[in-house]
Image 1 (tube, rainbow, N blue to C red):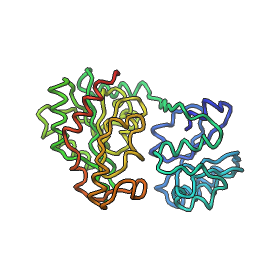
Image 2: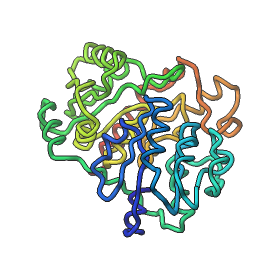
Image 3: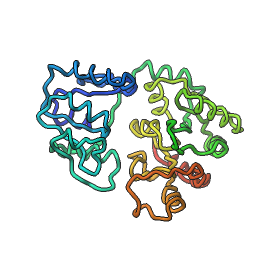
Image 4: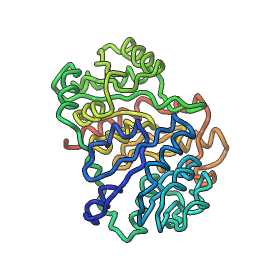
Length: 326
């Protein structure tokens, strides 16, 4: 959305209220005034934001996060027009702190929901480009960490750790995919992920189970370095997790593994045809209903749901992804 604004309204001055972690990914975007909101500081973050915005005036506030924290933060923004989500998506009491809303389009992909904001401003959203800068230093570090220069498969096996957030596929299946990629396509594998104890243990277990040992970069990269690694990959395999969307943003084919969340809502935006989608089956087993009969985006909270993803289905998508010209 930012890129759409910059292309079509190049004279517009843009400020972005952003978290500390997210800033590390986009802080080198040109012509953006970043205002850091450190949510770990609790109410102090709210007071700090109020001080930072005290003498600033805006024509538009685009409140693109429907949460109570974002609603409170928006109270500190002095803007004539405060645009938020439609009533169905305006969670966290957002509709009480905005004075305009985007179109109410049911059952949209999350990114399409975000694109309703520039549409409401009268902008053309037909071209979608992220163009996230990747510094040369990040590429150099990525190449230093990688054990080979040939094309490789990147697997980001874990999603973020949250309560009852069952998105991770099983270790043995990942190992079999690694061996298949090596034996059929001569593609070595790189494991990526964050520094959590779970992610490190998961990666170690996958590496132990695979005959063809992957290059394990889990917990070893910054966000920019991770982005560089994903941009160098031939294909990425991941569940519903941030790195899948980062790979999508840099144009690397992404095979999404989905059973507990709806890929129609959160799948890799440009690669939905590569998604292994067992969500309908998981929904039927969990609720006895079809996807059309439940709330859009409703999660399946069954730890066994990801077992519905079959190895042969992933291999079929890998064949398809490999056929895509780099």
